[in-house]
Amino acid sequence: MTMLKDGTGTCYQAKIDSENRLFVNSVSRDHSEDASLFGNSYNINTGIVNLTNANKSAVLYVKNTGTKRLFIQSLFYLLGNSTGGSGDVLITVLRNPTAGTIVDNATDVEINANRNFGSSNSSSVNAYKGAQGYTFTDGTKIIESIFNQSPTRSAISVGTIVLTQGTSIGIEVTPATGNTSWDTE
Image (cartoon, rainbow, N blue to C red; front, top):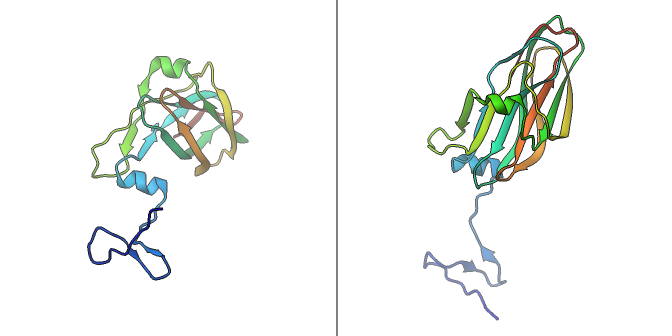
C-alpha cells in the first residue's frame, strides 16, 4: 500500500494533516472558460443573410475538419424586421448534413474568430454562409425553434453538441408567411 507523507516546505510535495487530509490550492472554471483561456473557443457568424420570400433556406453549415472535438453550447439568432411577413419564424438545426447548394456554393462565413484576442489559433472547420433558396439535401432534424418575427436577438442553449472529425451541423430558416425581405444572422 502506498502512503502519502507530509512534504510541507519542499515546494513539490503535498501537505497532509494529522487526519490524513490532503491540502490543495485549486482553481475551478467551466469548460468554455478553459477553452477561451487556452485559445480554443471561437465565434462563427454568418453575417447578414437577406431572405426574400417565406420559403425555407439553408443559412449556416459548419463541418469539423480537424482532429479535435468541437463543442457547441449555444446558438444565437439575430432576427431583423420582415417586410410583408406576419406570424412566426421556424429555425431548424440539422445533424450531419453533407450536401446541398450551401455546400456546393461554399461561401465562407463573415466571422470565424478566436474568442481569446491574444491567441493565434484558428478553428479547423468548413463554415459556410447560405442565401435565399439555398438547401440541404440530407441531415436529420435535432432542434426546431419557433420565434415571433419581431426583431430580436435570441440565444438558444443547446446543452453541448459535439462535432467529432468529419461531422457537421446545419441551420435552416423559414421566414414568416408573406415575407418579401428579412435580414437574419
